[in-house]
Length: 384
Image (cartoon, rainbow, N blue to C red; front, side, top):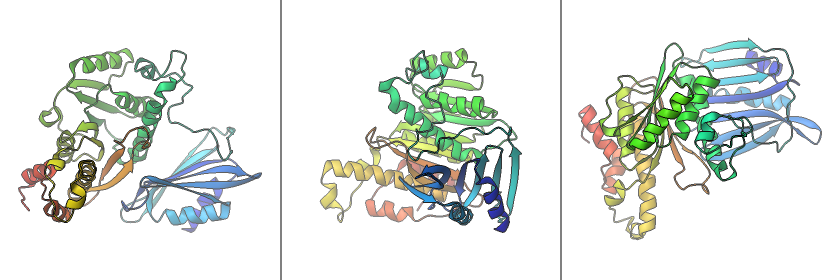
């Protein structure tokens, strides 16, 4: 702890840029905490931003308290990334509690920082820098400006890349990373993911996009070829019947309709994928199954039944993934006013055995049998 505080004191000087704590040791913790310097009433303090579930909390801390709190937070997280104008440090904690440190010297040049309390939003993709595929997908103009009517899509893309940034430490670095994107559609996020991981991060990555619409897939392949994205491929195919890969490191499924999400999650489990990112859509299955006398006063209203069924569907999916060896978080993908389909299930493969969860009690209570549960029974040979 003393060594960690010395490191924090060294980085949190006048050239401090940021600190990011990620990879929570417990799924109930926030998925990350970020610190940055801000100037309030001519005094520089350290603003800590905690991302807990769908909520964001801000704390403005003087340096001594920022150091103390960050050291305490490291008891809840496994990764700490520190950045200053003169270098970077990466601290990580093993499963056995061993703390490791890797430092990298910077160029020595001090970059001017915006310390204003309400500074301009920083995006992973610079909104003033031209990115070819964004232009072809109608998000950006030829002059490199974001189309005003498409700014929600631009924010969605960057929000998704923040999720990717968080899980990068979970992916292998000593070989090619294979990613499957089921139901990729026009592939805004697929192209952004490849651009970020390959072009910006320099990772050895292969991404496969799968969708049922032939014209959409044809256009996506033309764009991938146009931009020289040799590791990005698109195919026409059905999620449930896809057998084109033996080993997959990450599975992405965004707005796959109803039980298509379950088949994608089942594929990810069978592959032992290290990371799953899923934004479910149109959860109809349980709406047709759910029956419960106690809940009947609420279930008699169609709209409420539909919403409850959707939440129960995703809650059961999360618990099934937990039972199959994943640490799972339910996160907000984008703001509610942009779309009601805003839940993202993020699952990270944990070290250790699968564990039995009590989700079957909820299934019995609701008198439902979701597709993902049935698929896991087939896979494990278990029933009840």
